[in-house]
Length: 143
Length: 117
Image (cartoon, rainbow over all chains, first blue to last red; front, side, top):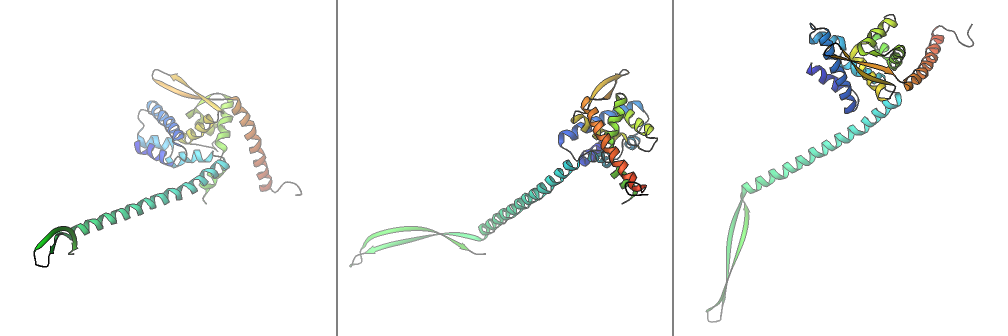
């Protein structure tokens, strides 16, 4: 019966609160029905209460035209909005993953060299007056 | 469109009217409403019990009916539905609208109406 209730919940075109209340009413009545008909199996119970789609139709049939149109209009607005947000998220995720992969590739093919440059100052007689050492880090791509 | 679909289309909004009319007679529980719908319509209008609860929920939500639990036997409780004054007003309104529509449709089907011989 769990799948039966799940299907009813999925088909009912109403808010969560309304769905829960309708489902609770049906569940309560199914339990009563079981007590009244001890031999009834799930198939018999479902045949008595009706297909989930037909139950949902009962709700839809009693919706006023204006209410129905408002619900459809809201759906038409919200579906593209959610779909757009989902596509944007996927694009951002793809770009993020691309950048991360490029970084991994670069770090795999790059080598770092440390170069030390020593600047020596001589006088006219060739004596060393000053020595300054500079250290540079150089990246080289070997890929 | 098959016959089933036409029947569903014709039933749109009718179950509220039927339930309100049945509850005007007396307070009833869910399955009793299903049985009375079939009996009182001469079998022309039937509904499965599951389909009734979304309609009952809407009527409860609109304050047209109320419900109360009644203990039946040792362990079982039964939910009885009761027509509220607002429901009685709604019943009068829906009945008038329904009669006007069905009369109009029948006049067209039977070829009567103004200007016809």
